[in-house]
Image 1 (spheres, rainbow, N blue to C red):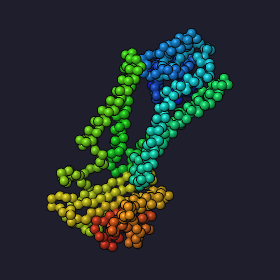
Image 2 (cartoon, one colour):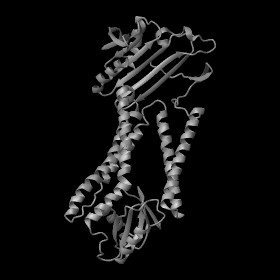
Image 3 (tube, one colour):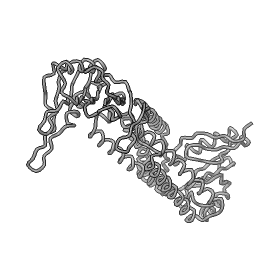
Image 4 (cartoon, rainbow, N blue to C red):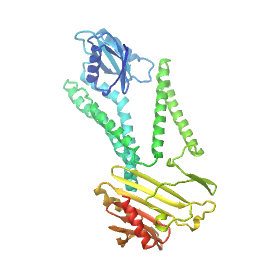
Length: 467
């Protein structure tokens, strides 16, 4: 028969009544609370009995204290006179139990209770949640700015698209706790003036829903790319590092507490250990990047490599929906054929590139390359905004009185079997770069030669059929 029970608990740190009810029910079931944590509470088997529990807050306490402060000991002595036994301390929170049938309440003045709870909130919750909320707001602003700058890349990249609702859900989860505390304090002060204590009521279901939704967004961010996203690897790596640093910081703090280290020294050493570990891990990571041990290149399988100006470069042989051989026939040119695909529920975006390799016996200077991108819009209302965004990727630039030409102009779409087609005007030239608008999606294609009408017609048929 097990003597220890670990239980997942989702109660607000300041929901006294909910915590007291939970501990009472567990004691009647033969389990006595032994340790509290942010997510899990530990119980030890004990004789089942009806106990009264009281949760109080002592704002002057700290999680770095090696033991009860003088004020806490004095409070415990007064409580013991009425039969209240101190069960455990968890930062500013204390849990007492009483075996009497109708024990005298520990706290009777509503105004004092409200003041103590709010002081404890400011020390342990409000500042932390405020910093976290501002941090998440910063990330949301960054995400929105990235969406505005590159809507196609953003909407088709699962890592970025699903991070937007993820950050928003985490912000709501943190901000809801912050707002709950502030709203409660304003109402509780008014109630206390009338001699009534207004308890906090937690909303664990809301927090669980928001956190579960965040987890779903995180899982979705792993999907939809043809290769491993280096950004995801970077994020996962840093999450692991931060968890490790946090665990080390907690271990140092608890070890110093057991050795009786004073609060200030404990706080200094614990925070210093976290800071030093953070700097060390950051330094090791940067060293790994500069040495080439860590790369942010897409983790694709290359079929070989070649040396170009002293640097080793990979080349690929990915399947392409349109190849130069389909337009001009096969020859002896050695090609690197590279494809990259990403998709979300809103949009799919694929980039393709065929380049001649500068290898022995191969003359890339006489070869013509091909590059194109396909964008499939999965929700009709996004079609026009995405078309506008693609057109706006090319903008004329004005330098003093000189206008540098860089824009698309409409051309005859009939050869492309499309609704609209635009050709790029760049400087004083008209390039063989086109934006093709079909009902199914868009193609941005660049021919590095002057294509014939037959080649354009063939390319249009093959690309349109690939949607």
